[in-house]
Length: 151
Image 1: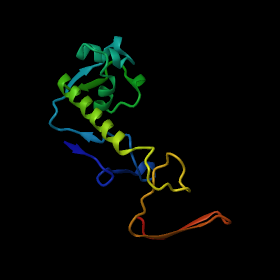
Image 2: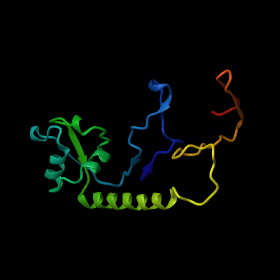
Image 3: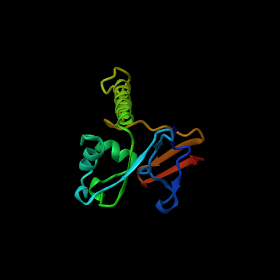
Image 4: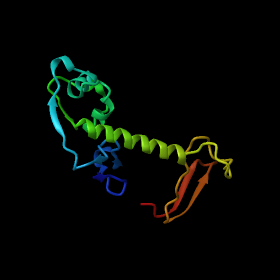
């Protein structure tokens, strides 16, 4: 298994050197993938592809994850769809459920700790880089000055 993080994810030079967050960020090289072609009847219908492969149309999200599909309406006849055996998909669903449970435990919105009055509701905290000395905000001139190296 190989997971991408911001440390090893490549920046896209065609997009102002920003991270491309739409690339597949999780690859398990040990999972056997099979391939099938989308038929004319399955045009823009990933549910029908799922029904043909697995006998059940409920594996749309898993097929989207495996194939890095962002929009199911882009599925056209002749497209190659990769899929994994159904037991691997069930494992993926159980892992997602475990991650959801962990997230639920960690992200308690009603926690009883000190509240930052300046922080907006539902905005994640900002982590200051170690090399950052200070940030000077001049509201009158509408400027922000960053002192230190933040690369």
